[in-house]
Image 1 (cartoon, helix red, strand yellow):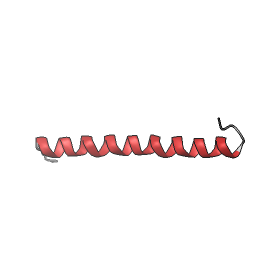
Image 2: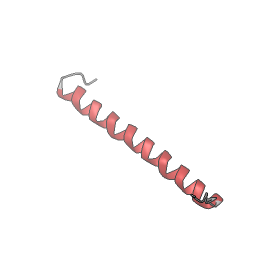
Image 3: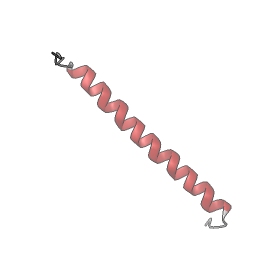
Length: 45
């Protein structure tokens, strides 16, 4: 039978922070890529 291990508060907050940072980083990379593609297409301001 599988045991359920209760994570500590610090571990839970660490995972939350890591997932949040990964999400923000992904959006940042996507935004930079879109900006690069738009600039290459001549759509800069």
